[in-house]
Amino acid sequence: MEKGTKQKSTKIKKFDKKNISSLHYFPYKKLKSELHWLDAKSKTGWSTKDELKELKPAKCITSGWVFEETKHYIKTFSTYSLEEDGTIEFGEILVIPKKWIIN
Image (cartoon, rainbow, N blue to C red):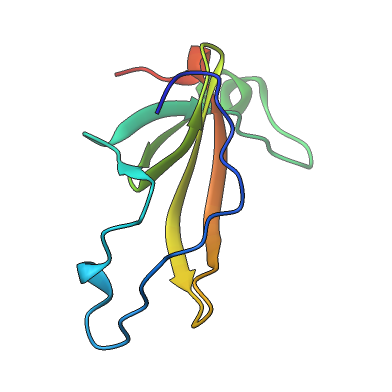
């Protein structure tokens, strides 16, 4: 997929309940490798100076498919469902700023 392109609502031309992996028209590419990225971490309530010094960003790992990618961010999803009419629904959706990616 070209960078900066948006996906339109996609329909699968052939739906095979017995073997979903046989669908040839799934337009999304699997991530080549896991994305390792940093995310903000928060804590509510009172903390000591030492506890505050120990607070670090969360190290996250994402795998799945690329929905859209630009020079600033990548949109991924880790789960999808195929409806009998060919509609794709997406789950576990993330938009990760590329500046947060560490690998």
